[in-house]
Length: 274
Image (cartoon, rainbow, N blue to C red; front, side, top):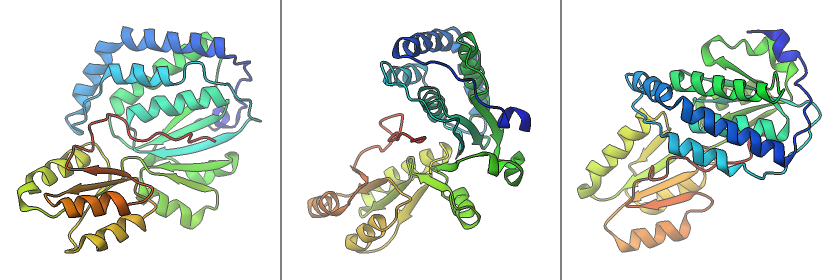
């Protein structure tokens, strides 16, 4: 890791809404120009991870930030641990740009080929606008956290509960955000194949999923509600009573009943750097 780059102040750029929109336009052009390269990398990545990435979804994400108000932060630095979902990569990069926060993205090997290309595209576009040293990246296995943690204001973990549990035992400035962290309950034998399909897709996409086997739905509801590390509650049932109880009693989670929880490509997005 280049510690000098990490410790160097990020370039202080005067980001207006007009300039941001120009950056977004260039990012979209660069994504489209490199579409075949990204899809080729995705094909290689799927030898290990089965997740298929859509360029159209990436373009939609970029549009979310159009006309955003730009903030000025006092040279803040944040470390972000996440599994490497490319859609999250784009969100995090654009949040760093609009809030002028220097970030270190710490990823595992999930869709590593796609992420490498995306981060290079972002770096090249930002250079065109004289924005330097804003986004750095490191791998889970090679990060020497002890050497650099004092250079950062906050450590953020997205979706990876294992890393979060380890970090919070040793660090005081750790924040956690769920991202497609799923609790699933199925009370019908006829829907077990759907349960298995959801489980397989979740594990292949590196999402965390827990299947509950309790006999009473009230017990499952209590377990899901008491777990702050999950953001999605899925019920597979043929019982209208169970459906109504689940939808009425589950609190502060995305509720999905008898549907594909991955119908939307991207999970709930927060302002992770706020």
